[in-house]
Amino acid sequence: MTSQTTNLWFRYTVIMSTCCAFIHLTTSVSFADTYKIDNAHSSIRFSINHLGFSYTTGRFDNIDGIFSFNEKRELSSAKAKIFVKTNSINTNHKKRDDLLKGFSFFHISKHPIAMFKATTITRDAKNEKSGTITGNLTMMGKTHTETFNLIFIGEGRDPWLGYRMGFNAKGIIQRSNYNLNFMEGAIGNDVTLEIFIEGIKQ
Image (tube, rainbow, N blue to C red; front, side, top):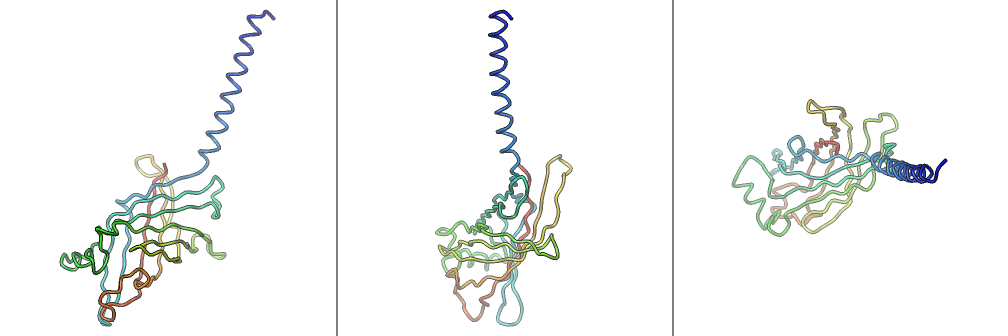
């Protein structure tokens, strides 16, 4: 083998080794699945007792965030962050919405974002599509740990060749924990939240 051939073979070996290392590295990283929340197909709804006669309902229209898993989809690896713009609150009644956005309730100019960061996700031993999600809810400058019942809805390809996954979660929080005490008595303290999340794989 000539020196020129040896040199070419050495360069080829180095290049191939580098490429193999790069492929291995990027493949390992790509195993983690990350999904971005699709605001157009996600919502957070709430209901609260009104005067002891009925329930007032509403929703938040602007939701953002991500959730992810490792390559084995182990629940211990799951991460989720949900961001909600408080000025997107909508109860289908402008006068009431303006009051809710004001300083007596959400004070949106001071607290424009509410955030939920998951810390633990568990699966029901009898139903793999059910479980719980526990995390820290930050709203109005206060942070508390909340737990919601979780249901896995489904996953798969969409008509646009993307890949989607969806969950529902439901639970009850106390508004007094988040400095939302206005009209105490006339409005209940327990707030039922229903969270509908659809994510697009990135």
